[in-house]
Amino acid sequence: MKKQLTAVALALLSTAAITYTSCTIDECKDVVCQNGGNCNGGSCTCPTGFTGNRCQNAATGTIQFVNNSTNPYSVYLNGAFKQTMPGKTSVTFTVNYGYYTCRVVQQSGFVLTPTDQSYSGTVSASSNLIVSFP
Image (tube, rainbow, N blue to C red; front, top):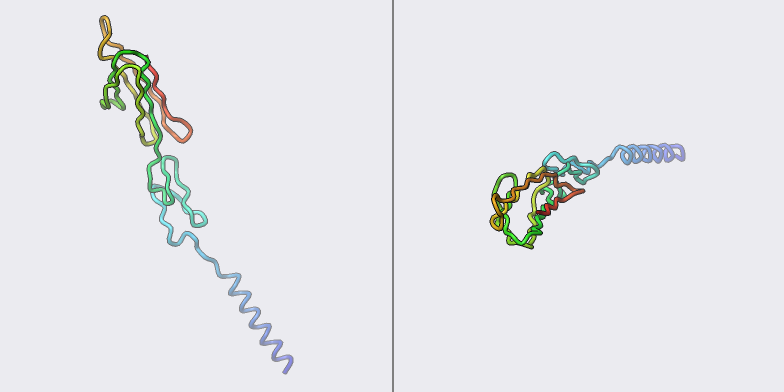
């Protein structure tokens, strides 16, 4: 009888050990990462340019224009007019990560031709743009 109980106990322990070691939980089973993100341990690792727990948000930064002149300037981002800035003011735009061209055109106070300046740069996690003129 003792041998039978030992055999049953060993069989139960072996089955429990096999069941325990072969049971793994897929932490990424119900996790859907967007915009090319990858699931790792139940959390999304987002590609550059995206944030959020599921990589659902475009990452943003800023572009600041600083008008050091007393004259008004028109401001353009990627060729699109944004606004006219009075002299001695600054304005900040929140933008998605990426490469930008910035242009400022003097509106008054010039002698023969207006000052027209262009700048460019990348907005990313490590850098925002500051366009200071003239």
